[in-house]
Length: 363
Image (cartoon, rainbow, N blue to C red; front, side):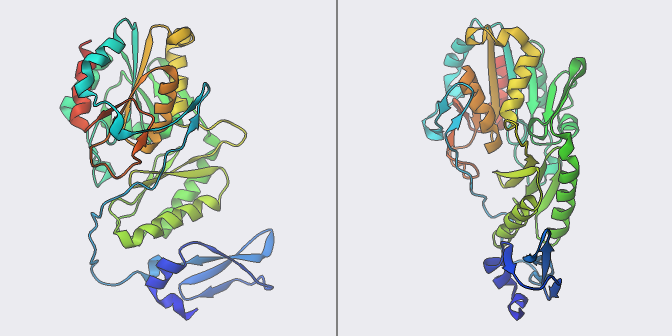
């Protein structure tokens, strides 16, 4: 086991936990590694590496701002109504250039129900998630839109945190990818509260194991968790991924997905349909608009969703099924998310999002 003294060897060859079969049930501790018994089979051990204690000393020689590239691929999804195929982002119409067509689609609709992601949509992605502040002009645009339309913020952030960022009490807020929903009139809906202790344990373990990884940050979203690696140098990113995967797999009742330079950990609902931003949108449409959504063609309701990340694709798919409009925020050179989407239109950046919100408010 002397090879464990070589940190590069650890990172590139022993990232994943390795099952080891041994006739002895004794705990073996070595320099930089330990063998941990997994009951109820004491002869099966897992090799757990102490990544952080073997990090190279001295200043880092690599850029912290190394590009993040998409590691997720969109597959066909089956909604309640049909099987949907994702489309290439480059084939979608640019929303700002298609405003006349959008106005035509909205014409005659009695109600717009507008769903907005937060990070990357209402505010640019920033290196420090705690400083993702909304601009006054964007806040004013959302507020103006909400005067005559129903508006909901649907975010991976914990609900109270995103509400602090937006600072508009008239909106509905769906935090933790829709697992925690609240809004005016006493609206309160929570999913998978039983998973909170498991999420808390995973949070504590991840923070301990990633404490020495440069740029890694574990954000507690209460009903979900975000493991950020945007600021992590490229040679440490596989460590973040595999530690995350390890902590999720050793626990029941949670799962992880990938996003833009982030791993999202959420409750898993055994025996139930998946809960995500798309199901949160479906719930809110029924809760807020009731019978109007049951009529053919959604009655006089047009649902609209604007988002930028992979997790927003669940909502895009639902809106596509329901005949709504969904706007993906992605620049031409976007590399942090898949180049396929279930969206109907593309917005280049947050400035175009604000312009679209202002246009919608004027209709």
